[in-house]
Length: 547
Image (cartoon, rainbow, N blue to C red; front, side, top):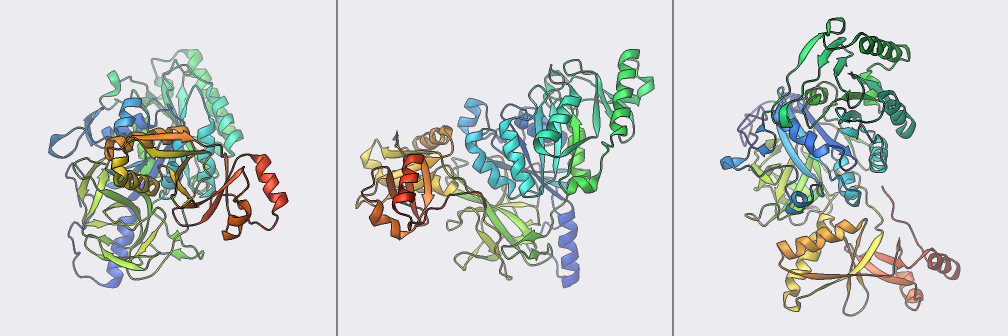
């Protein structure tokens, strides 16, 4: 298998590996898995997540200079923010997968949306990674979105590396940032690189592992790798005696309080190795990328729904964590992103869909790089495989080759906004229906239908921008202009058939069905919820919550 620049990614590039014993085969799979690092970058919007992603590609040799990602046939359009709407607004609104090689390791970087309205997409991605990098703006520290994402990482015991970004600009005092991290998220930061100078007057960093001073060098526009001028701290000619003394005092304080790197506690989620730099000017980027290889864990045995562990060397298994259609107008198909959990994936192999127990061949399998794709023959635990036009797959579905397994479901969110949606062009009803179903399948919106003879579709979302993306994609991908009208409903509860008759005349409630056929109740306000619970105590009403 090769990545987009033609470099070998796996040691088995044949569609069918050579004959070998079961023990040799298991050892080969385990060895390949050990080379994998599968992680996500999480941050608040504007903290620099997308910039850091691009700079990782620069240092891995995937781009010649920042802003131009190499793709097939010399094209330069495959970036992490590949959707037209992302490029227009300058924000990430959909997750994507980027695979590249660095230091003989296979890096699977799952880029996540930065906007809170798409936090559900981020949560799905976090179900498919082994570690994460938390990017913080030096001027803003821990923000609400960062805290929310960290809580999911903590719940899933995902080890986190921290990168304090934009330290070349005015910002908060570094000791205060450390205290903020520990106070707000309950994980102790252990600085690996320590800034010399204050935020906005950045001189460089001390690598606490060897006590060497690395001078800050600003690379013009951040288009090339930053140079590193390294020396012992006492020999730094660019530092005043006062700054030198202050830096030594700060390092002594860190040592005194025991804020030293400890890989064991990092892997347990108790500490977070911390790095400081500026992604825009490339300083510190190599340090954090090296940390992914040196510190972040390789794929581990996944836990199934029964609580058992699926060993890496057991036959192929995986789960779908994302569905995406129309990534490339030239293809006009849909791709199911599958995280390989065990065994060796081989293109063309027959695998079983755990939910339906139906088997299908994987003739069309690809590695994905932004919105570009490349045929993949072999993949190992930790890799992400794009199964093209695997139409029956839904988010969270498990897959296996010979040994059945079901992995835990992926978190779902209770929507906060509910709107009616209609097509402005009645002649395009089929396209409208297809677009609705596709957007619901991808998780762009949640789709509900009332129980009227002629159902009126209701779309639901966590945030308003999901509706904007939905409308944009319907007109651009399905050529259907839509009208979205807000409903009066603000709450949703899961129920059963017993609620249909009693609630049909309650003006503050509406009974609907979701895509799976489950009975749901839309409720106008907490007042109406209280009324229903008091008037109809036998009706089951359950909140939708994260699994």
